[in-house]
Length: 255
Image 1 (cartoon, helix red, strand yellow):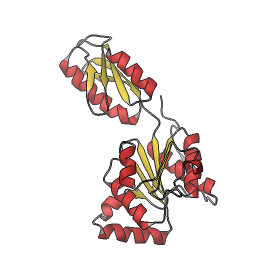
Image 2: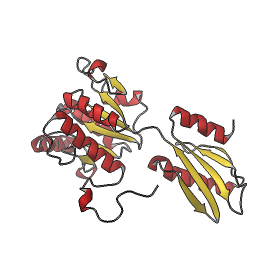
Image 3: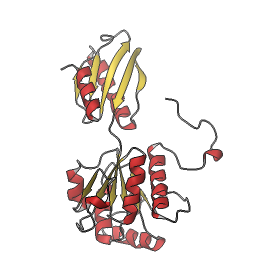
Image 4: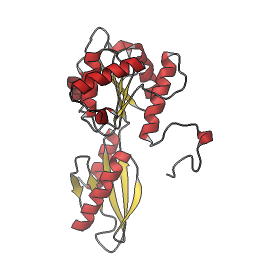
């Protein structure tokens, strides 16, 4: 199977991959394709070993940014076409807020997962918008969905130290671009002290967005879910979540 055919199959399956096409240049074979996968492996060739290496580098940069771009390399034009599945939001805690967050995440085109070891709460019928509801502790649940990658965002919604701390400890050892945790200022302070005693430094804990969400003045579960999802989307797009009326310059990035 050719690199292009493999890419089309992976795209249909909703898998993450990048197809690099040599558009023009004095090296390689114009029109040749190189398929690059998230683990760095590749299939096919552009007809030049040095150009293949550069193509893998460009593809690696764009795979997780989920952007398709025309790149230049030593006088050669390379088009990197990226296929990526919808990002994942893993929600720890089968609470009422989680049901609302699943609805908002699904409406935004994300894949929400709910994790809670308490099987009486982690019932699939309570979360019809979830991709999966997993009644297991965080380590086991994350293993079931393939671990945490750079397109996996995490929201900790329980107030149970055993579950919160287990989830956050795993999250802080991962490449997750976003880790949010619900709770009052007092609950955040108590959690901070517990994690410090467990050997997790202040610097590492600074990755946790807590209290979770943007300041929308949310009062209901649905409004709280909206504030959380708004923060998650802002982080994914490299924004701070402020009002567009207060933003200077371009509102939308060029395609």
